Structure formats: structure tokens, C-alpha cells
Length: 283
Image (tube, rainbow, N blue to C red):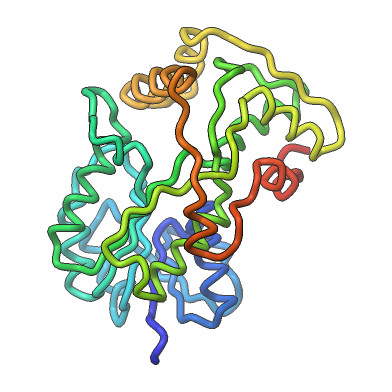
């Protein structure tokens, strides 16, 4: 069987980068969509293009069989044109969506869930073969604490008791590779989680263990957190979506499942393992 030729978008990000690495290591022909210079494994072809400019994607998609799609915007504006462009060349798309889509209850202001829902709808209506991966929170999002940890040895954040089954990017990538290179996940929407619920306070402690020095969690209010996010330049719709959703998880945490192990044959990595893997980022 001829191996598919795969285009990875988001190839310089944590998940897309892990997908590129796994495909390349397996000898699968892989091409990376990039907007500028990129540090990629030797032998991986980089082609310039921008999902914000669908007309720029032709060269990257030429000769491609399947696409790993990471949508980098907070709305689905332009997504129809991108999906249409993919459909002119490829036969399959694997989309990195969100577990929030699976609830079936999209509330006004839930910006993240809204655009993921629209992307899934567009892809399913496109005639392409498809898989929609629906991970819970990314362990990699805690890299947002790295500057604080390095500078102060503390993390100032709300909701110390918020417990989530954060998922390692390597596990998302392993599932994505199965969806890109086999037919086992065609038409599937697997919800992907880490192996256990871990509170934010415990996440910070595990990062401290990984780097060999204590790190404190200093709890702030949701209002303080919202002000911090706005000051850092986060769009208002993201602030309004993320913090209330996280607060709601205190009483209704995300369910934990074993989908990663069922699909890949290997148990999902723990947050402790993620912290060890990323210790240099926090030192």
C-alpha cells in the first residue's frame, strides 16, 4: 500500500510539530505549512502558505492526500474557502477540534466551541474523508506559566482546585497519525483526555518537582485573572469564554476516558510525564 502524502498545518506548534515528528520518524512523506522560517526535522519539506489566505495554499496542497488541520483563529471566518481549497487536492482531513463541541450545548459567547463546531460542520459537508479529534485541555497551555516560574518561583492564577485531565501533545499527535495513515477513525469524533484529573495547584507542584525546586500556586480572583488576560492582549471573546467555562468545571469536571490507549495501544501520558518532558521550558 502506498503511503499517503500528508500536509501538516500548525507544524511549528506543539501538536502539529509532534505530528510532523511522528510521521517523519515513520517514513511517511510529510510536508509542513509554514508562514516563515521554521525549525523542522531534516528531510521534512516546508512550504509557505497561510490559512488566513486560502489562495496561498495551492503549492502546499499540490500532490497531497491528507491534511492535519489546526485552525489558528477565534472565528470560522474564511474556513469555508480553506476547506474548499483542501478539497481540490486532498481526500482526507483530520481536524484538531475540542471536547467542548461534544456537549451539544453551545452557549452564546463560547467563542472556542463555536468556531470548532462550525469547522466540523464545514468539513463533514465537504465530501472529504474526515476525523474530528476532540481533546480536553492541552497540558501545553501551562507553558503560559513558564515566565512566572522562571522569574518568581510562583504561579498567580485563579481556581487552584480546578481539576482537568490535561492531555500531552504527543498523545494527540499519536491519535492524529492513526487517523491520517489508517482508515480506523474515518468519520469518528474521539474525545481525548489525559489519564487523570489533576488540580491546577497540583500541576504547579509537579512542575516544581520536574525542575528540582518548589513552585508556589498563589490564587487570584477571576476578575484579577480577566484583567491580566486583557492586559496581555487576549481578545475579549476569549476572556469571556475561557474563565467562566473553567469555573464551571469546578462542580462538573470533564470525564476521563481511555480513548488514547484504545486507539494507539499505549496509555495516555500523565501530567507528571508532561512536566518532566518540558522541564527545560520552566528552568
